[in-house]
Amino acid sequence: MDYKNAGVDIEAGYKSVELMKEHIKKTMRPEVLTNIGGFSGAFSMEAFKGMEKPTLVSGTDGVGTKLKLAFLLDRHDTVGIDCVAMCVNDIACAGGEPLFFLDYIACGKNYPEKIAQIVKGVAEGCSQAGAALIGGETAEMPGFYPEDEYDLAGFAVGVVDEKDLITGKELQEGDVLLGLASSGVHSNGFSLVRKVFPMEREALETYYEELGATLGETLLAPTKIYVKALRNIKESGVKIKACSHITGGGFYENVPRMLKDGVQAVIQKDSYPVPPIFRLLAEKGGIEEKMMYNTYNMGIGMVIAVSPQDAQAAAKAAQAAGEKVYSIGKIQAGEKGVVLC
Image (cartoon, one colour):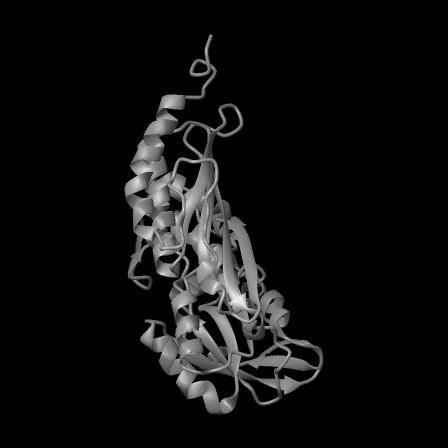
């Protein structure tokens, strides 16, 4: 009896690391001091000594049950982008610049080529965010996960000068709310998605005219990474007063998180186009509108608040980063919360 007979293939682990390296190499930053394969990742803070009060910000998250679709379609090169996005978008919401990322993959059986595809997506997400992939872990856990399944989670660290933290404290009545378009469902609400649509390959490979793609392609579209857009806005000289990443809980849970007491966000539902996947989901599942806005991003992945005089410049800066931007509402005095009308 040995470890391999018990279900853990150490040699497959070595091969996975070798296959990953070509993807990881593309994410490197000059501050990275260690190579992949060591026991930890080292990152120099020397470049940030010029900040008045350098402050670390962090985020951790996973991909959730969206992974079930990746298993069914045997497509593993995009979920890594989702994993990175869920972490770095939260850091960007605080005004931070993502610096580095670590991933954790737990699987029933280590198939090196599959693991490499997952990490390829993670590396792509890191490249989009400007973060270095400096380490991670692949845990082969036979008997805990089915052989053809895995879980994926990650952790990111960023930095911001304390004076540049986005806190919502400076919000005022009349401030403008801008919405940055999502790429679709992103990585939230898939437990409900899987109840609405048959989780069978044939159903996921069905082409829908209104989607312009198959159902599976639409649902697996990776989460948008908004780091570059928010950086562009900051570099344009615009002060982002508040910011909300629209994740699980949709508008009703996430928008209030960016508000201070005494103000509320008023959002016009007809101020931007809702992607067809959400209309299809509501129709097929018989889901009422409020529940849709309480579960999904409904086409807006990030909401920011700026002064009225800065709205045009902020939108232009985000558009220069490739984002679609909509003026979706305003801040008004009232009980802390969000009003959709």
